[in-house]
Amino acid sequence: MKGLSKKTALFRHCEERSDEAIYYNGVIMKNKVFLEGMRDGLPIGLGYFAVAFSLGIVARNAGLTPIQGFIASFFCVASAGEYALFTSIQAAASFLEIALITLVVNARYLLMSTALTQRFDPKTPLIHRFFIGFGVTDEIFGITIARPGYINPIYNYGAIFVAIPLWSIGTSLGIIAGNFLPARIVSALSVALYGMFLAIIVPPARKNIVIMISVLISFAASFAFTKLPLVSQLSSGTRTIILTVLISSIVAIIKPIPEENDEKVIE
Image 1 (cartoon, one colour):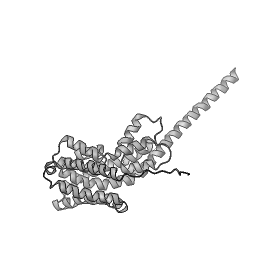
Image 2: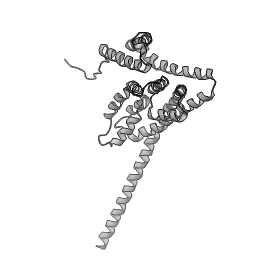
Image 3: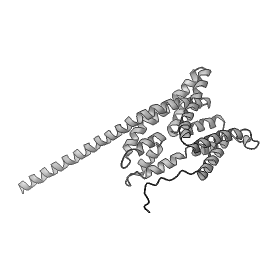
Image 4: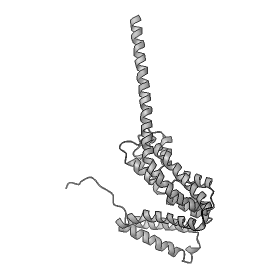
């Protein structure tokens, strides 16, 4: 009995050491994945910082303080969405108009989040799904979807930990700079944001004739809506909502994106 108790104690000791090893290995693995997310999120965050600085100039023109700009950027991590938000505030749009235009402009993130749900481990808790959905951007979606296997929330947290603060700080510094820089420089920096949007739409427009035609129609329709008798009386936010929904719906019906079919049909 005495020898048996020694064997039992030894077995329990080995079992405890094994549990400790598993725990520490798990912690090391989580830290490694988190650092990988930070590594991949750093260049994204630096790009966000430059764009957010220009957005900060727009926010400053809309009358926002650096703290308000930081909060707005922290909870709305979207360049087009924030631009629509700040310009709507500057145009004294109603809360309903601001909510609608932000929803329409950011609608693509609903599709991205839906796509990511297919990559989650079924056992992933809802809280992780919520925070990953909160941090979805075009770039973070890209690096997440590119990783093989199930989505590891720790990786996304690492990327978000770097990218979102740099985005928010960039907006605040843009507002601060706008308050101190001369008016001519502020005006020049405001133009930089239009250059960013051109950089977004020109490359795909050159590759896809449908996108090019859609962009040109959008420019022409936007100008026409400022001149036509009835719609010109609407606020700029309402006009943007109408044009965005109308043009995108018409193009989707007339020229839908063909579904990719990897399966070969054998006749």
